[in-house]
Length: 338
Image (cartoon, rainbow, N blue to C red; front, side, top):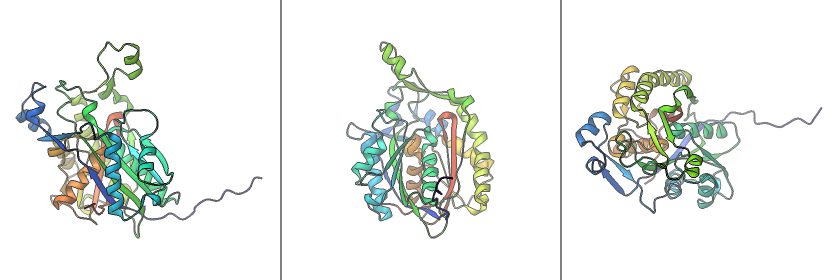
């Protein structure tokens, strides 16, 4: 019989220790978007709730935005880069397959060689990554994990595509996950519906494009009606599962932070949950658009910055998107970087 393998038997409480974000400098209004697509400001706002979004400039790469948001999260948490054991980056728009974005972020933030993982789960990416980070700290594998959601969606949407161009924006948000005095992150509920994977897809694939570069380059294609129906009528059920797994009801939460996909989807989900009027609901989409994996942390920051929520509040996070994938958890809202 082989030697016994030592394992950690104590499960530890976890918490979000700090939050930091990066919002690109350039604000793009609906009027500017409509110069390239056949639409109007009124139509866009009535269908999505979006008034403006931000597009990253040449100096605001996925890597640069991730580093900036990560550095602010470290400052808010009061920890150094050397205390970070693992960096997890949630993104679908990092432009190269290797090296991993997380490895370069870990190096730039001075972690001294932290574990590095890139997660591609579309708009659900941040909550997927948060679930992984939570388990790493809870089981004792790490003491601190940096989670970053970051996207340059402006690079992935065809500028004249009326169905998607107005929806998406760019940005980054990061949190430090560490030990807590009491439970500050609940269990993650996640899953996918690959049968509807074509509802949000990239066409053509990059290998096909490299073989025949005369065709249209790869862009994101979305079947909006299918996505709306799926999210609006399934995510309320998923939200209830998250609360049940956490031992809570809607009356126990202070804030609801859904993925900022569409203001109408958020309204339908809130109604299906019978969400009390006392619960603050994020509406960052109005000024930020849909930033995919960066959506949840950016929405959390907007709520904290504007006073809609405060550190210590109990918040339900709910993410969904390409895959079609979803994930959610209940958290205690963290402190925000200055």
